[in-house]
Image 1 (cartoon, one colour):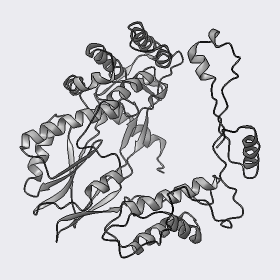
Image 2 (tube, rainbow, N blue to C red; image 1 turned 90 degrees about the vertical axis):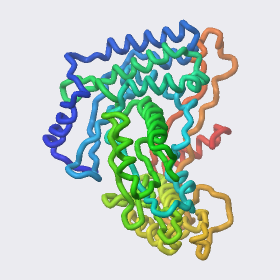
Image 3 (cartoon, rainbow, N blue to C red; image 1 turned 90 degrees about the horizontal axis):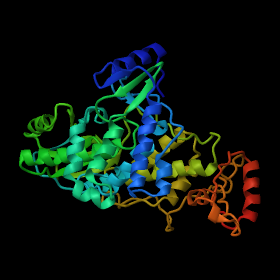
Image 4 (spheres, rainbow, N blue to C red; image 1 turned 120 degrees about the vertical axis):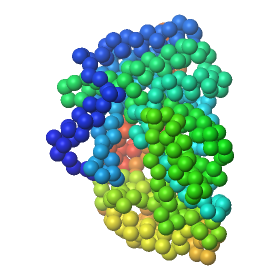
Length: 456
C-alpha cells in the first residue's frame, strides 16, 4: 500500500499526461467511437467472418469513458507512476479481446517463459561458459513506447502464421488493429485525453502486441551481434541473458539502437546473483552452473491473506499451500531447513498456526533436487490436492463452502424455436456467488446440495 497526498498524486499524473504521447480532447468521444466499433463488427458479420453470437459480443450500447489512474512504482525512487487505463468499459474493449485472441493462438516464441516456475525449470543446472555473466535488460515503459509502425510491420511479417487463426484478410485485420490503437482514450479529473503513441496499459491487446514487437526486436539484435547468447529468456519486457563480460555494454548499445523509443536499462549480477521475476539466479563461479532461489524484493511487506481475516478457511489454506510450493519449487540452492525457516517466518507473520504450517508442508510434495536430496520435509506419499484443515486446527472457523451450484438447463418443453440461439444459451446456466458467513453459508450450501445432483 502506498499513501500519497492528493496534490502530489495529481502533480505526478499531470506531468505524465503533459507528454507528447497524449492530447487533450474537447469532449467525450465515447458515442462516436461506439458507433465506429459497432459498424466494424457489423461489417465482419455481413462478410460472414463472425457469427451472430460474436457480433452481439463485439457490439455495445452502454460504453463509458475509461478513467486513468497512476500505479506507484514503489521499488523506484520518488515513486513514479505507471499510467493504467482500465479499458473494460471502453467501446473497443471486446474488439481488442477478439483481435488479441487471434494473435495469441497463432503466436510462438523461442524466448518466452510462461512464469517463474517454467523459468526455474529451464535455468537450473545449466552450465554457462567461463568469463560470462548474468545480465537483465528491461525496456523503459514498453507499452506506452511501442511505435505503431513496428506493430504493423510485425503483423505483416507474421501474417502467414496469423491467417491460420482467422478468415479475415490482412487489410481488414490491420484496419481493426488501427481502430483500437488510434482510439485509446480516457478521462482524468474533468478532462478527456487521447493516447497518440504506443499502446495503453489496461488494453487486452497491448500484451500480445508487445510480445510480437519484442520477438522481432530480439531476432534483429541477434542477427546484428552475429551469435545467439548462451541463455536468453523473455517475460514481456524483461530479458534475462548470459553474456561474455566484455560484450555487455556493446550488446546493450545494439539493443538501444533498434528504435529510439524502445530504450533498455541494464542490471548485472552482484556477488554471483541476479533477480529475475520472483527468483534469484545464483551463478556458481566454481563450476559455472546456475541455480535459483525464491526471491522477494526488499520493499516487499511479506503480507499474505491473514489467517484471522474474514475469509473462507480453504482460501487461507490455499494461500499458505501455494506460498509453500512457490518457495520450495523455485529454490534449489538452499538447504531444506533454511527453506522451512523462510516459510515459517512469512506464514507466522500472517498468523498461521505453527501446527498448521507443519501439516501443510508435510502434505506438499517437494521437488527434490541433487542439492536438497539429503533432506526433506518427510512429505507424505499422496497425490497433490488442496489440503483439508486439521480437525481441531481452529474451532471458530467454518470450512470453506463448495462453489455455488450450476443451475440445470431449462425444461425441454420450452419452445426454443421462438428464442434466438444466443438467448437460449444465456438461460442455460446461471452462476451466483455467496458471501462467506460462518454457520449460515455452509447450511445454505447443504440445502442446495440436496436439490442439485450436479452440485460439487
